[in-house]
Image (tube, rainbow, N blue to C red; front, side, top):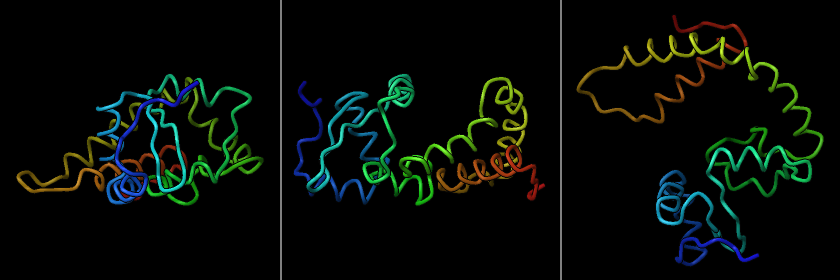
Length: 156
């Protein structure tokens, strides 16, 4: 089966684009090539998948593992200790620890808490002031994790 289409720039140019602006690279590639595209970073080739249903199917397949070294491409976005960057038994153990709080009815029950946290943080933003959306989204994410998973409410 042939690889899906992807950016035509040299693999080294693509690598520099990825390092310089990983989200921009992804958005541009998805807009130009669709939910499935080939990225070449230096000497390595990756097939990128962005459709949530396709990702779910892939990650649920028993023959698919989570080899940490292959997933290093997302290290700039997710950090060094992300479950997706781990492989083998370490990945399975960490995933088992994380999954119960984020499943089914529990997740639906967290919805109100998550919405309240997002409301409080967004209402605190200064109007008519420039801001980095990524930084503010990280604030919301951190508060959600601290409050929903660990029961810590440090900001309010």
